[in-house]
Amino acid sequence: MKLDSVRELKQSLMRSMLSPAEVTARSRAVGVARRLAASATDHRGVALGVRPRRKSDYTLAIRVQHRGYENSDYIQRIRAKARGEIDFAYVGRIVKRAVPGLQDENRPLRIGCSVGHFRITAGTLGCIVRNGAGGVMILSNNHVLADENRARKGDSILQPGAS
Image (cartoon, rainbow, N blue to C red; front, side, top):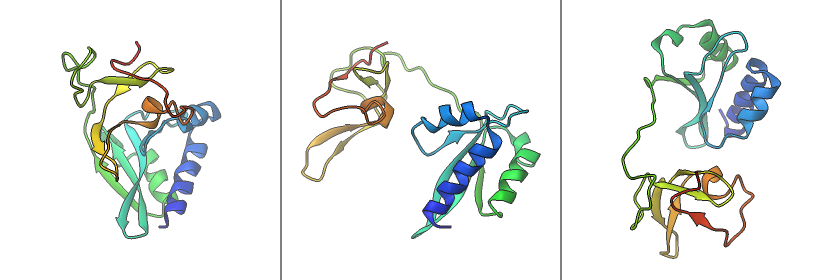
């Protein structure tokens, strides 16, 4: 599938399987995978995303935390709407890990430490990267460092992030 087609399918699935309030809340989420929930049944262990297959070819990615979802009606409806063009994987239970010291001040910075744009609470430092000019930069999610595209050049990034 073309990238736009997969994205449109994902949005269509979200609109048809979630209440309007849930779609609005989840549309603000940043990242490839977004959790889905059926209106009548709780499916918090299911995530949809987009996965590249080959050059200019993509598929709908379905990730589940519970093996019981594999053959559920919920997944079968998604599979049918995607016309079988899915990448399905059981990922197991995903939990946050609390590592001592990552919410404290870290000098030098450590991957996984608490950071955040001054207007948000806090997030996680993903990695340290070099830009094309060789400058050192930090990388995290858009909502963590750029306040969902509302940040301005020169805004403060706190470490640790505000709590």
